[in-house]
Length: 280
Image (cartoon, rainbow, N blue to C red; front, side, top):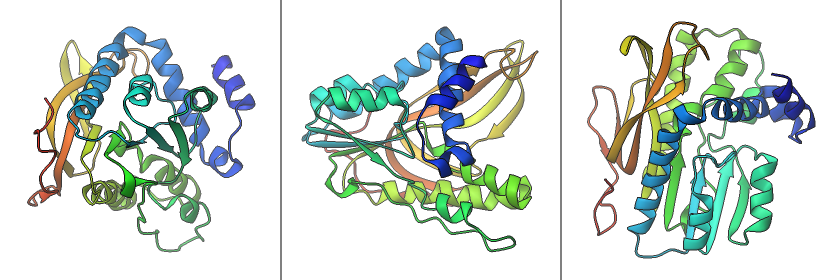
């Protein structure tokens, strides 16, 4: 905890994002990865594998846009920089290690961006005002040969929803439609991309006792991506990280985004993927 506090104190970050907890969240997830390298290793290998498999199946390798790249531990950055002429990393902010990588690799560009379009509106929201509608956008998406949304979809609502809970006293029931709308809007933006899209996201959280699930949570609030690829379990918080007696794991899916649906609705098709077929 002391190391995390020092990193939080000395790491540069825009003041509004620091106040909303964006820097804290990046440092916390990186610290958890460092505490549990063996538990996280299969997830990181699987994520790298899906990304490289999708990239290898393209017919053109000029520009790749990677959303959720504030840390890059789950992104095979060196390989992407060798394969593509431009690697555009997108996130709210970037840790110093990522900025250093961008300085060292000429192919890598940083594009700080709120892909939900609501962070500033939420921060400045007057008391009692209507919640802002998603205004999703992704830098350089129109020029991309591949877009990768990497382990970020379920996290998009976290920062604005937490702020609304703390400063506008909204409970989880009131915030659920807002969370669902942000997730669905990101998938809409990806669906409209003029190139193949690789989506990697966790979908379900389980608490495990003696290798049996004792509690489960839908991390996407009823939004169901259709992905052609593979699925695995991410041992994100071995006991006692979050629970003294329970391990926590997430189900992850990764591959070509084919469409999505809201629960009990028909999938929204994104059209054909690359001519070579899908991953996995």
